[in-house]
Length: 128
Image (cartoon, rainbow, N blue to C red; front, side, top):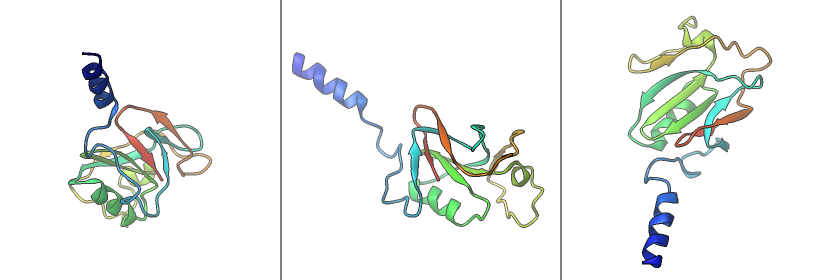
């Protein structure tokens, strides 16, 4: 019985298959931590959220959008971090697909709009 409970505990501590991205998908990105990305002012980014088929699709979306600053990822959820200016659809060159759901806020990235830290959140990963 002791062996069975140890195996169950070990299985509970493992992430779900496909839940986290791996380095193989993240070429050109840096893993920041488990949670949501924060800017240099330690504020949450505005973002566009979309469901993706896999981690590779999330990283590819960010690579193909000049305005993507970083990623909050937890399969199938892909959040592309951006500035509030882009999120509020004020940049006509941003080319935002209709399936992207905005998550705008009042953060204006006052010092510099780049990923500097993360807010711990189970199930999500922050990449820049």
